Each structure stands twice: as C-alpha cells, then as structure tokens.
Image (cartoon, rainbow, N blue to C red; front, side, top):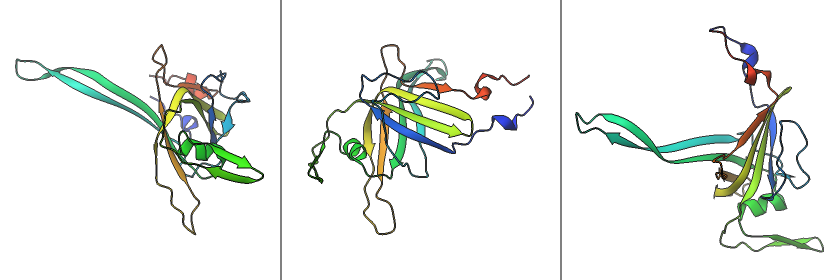
Length: 187
C-alpha cells in the first residue's frame, strides 16, 4: 500500500461552540455557524479530546469456556477540553443550572446544584485548508475539572461534553472538505 504524507493531519487550530438544543445545525465543514451558536472562546493548548468507549459483556460457551460472542452493553462518546477564556457562556457551562446576572456593570453568579442542561455543541478542527466540523446535536457538560486560582496560570475550566443519541442513534455528525476523506489507498 503506498503511503500518503499529504493525508497526515494536525489540529493546528479550531473552535468550540455551544447553542440551544433546538438550533439549526450546520450541514457542512465551512459554512458560518448559526447566529444562535456562541464561540466558547480560547481553548487551552491541549485542544479537544474525543473519546469513544464501549463496555462489553462476554458470552462464553459451555464447551471449553471460550468466548463465543461479545455484546456491547453500553457506549459513550465524549469531548473534553479546557476553556481558558472567562465569559458568561463558560461560567454557565461550568456551573450547570446557574446564570450570570449583570446589572450596571456588576455581575453575580449564584452557584446552584447542577441540573440538566442539554445543548447543541460543535467543534471546528482546522489544518490549513482542511476542515473537520463535529456537530453534537444533543449534548451536555457531564464532568468538570477543578478551578485553580494561581498567579502564573490562566483560570481554566475543564469541561467534558457527553453526546446523547438521537432517534436514529446518531451521537455526532462529522463534516469535512478534506480530500483525504474520500481517498482509498491503493492495494
């Protein structure tokens, strides 16, 4: 099989977005995000980590105790990133169910016990002219990291978004204008 160095991609830059659950979803890799989507802002240099996990149950045959089948008992797709820009959007994502109220230039965030807060999420991953857009039609921040207040570090908000399945089982949609996506290596 011939190797193709031109198909090696690096996530040079990108962005993370959040929108209300009922927002119009993007339908390609490069069109502008709908007006209802908000850019989350600066993300740490760790970028965005996509994780796909599945738990399986082994079915063993009585004859010899060999595994004869594995059944997926649960699965999960998550996206983890650390926002390093402090904003109303980031604070409300981190403190699920809490709202920032600003009056006369003064803001208050009454931190409440977290409650459900499902939204649409999106991630753009860019390498030069190659774009990948990931749309999570139904997701929620399900984990947060610790916030450290320190003199030599940005205040950071670690967020993990869990993607929930739609009626057809889709948890995320990926679009790309990258020619490598359509190429099949020669045998």
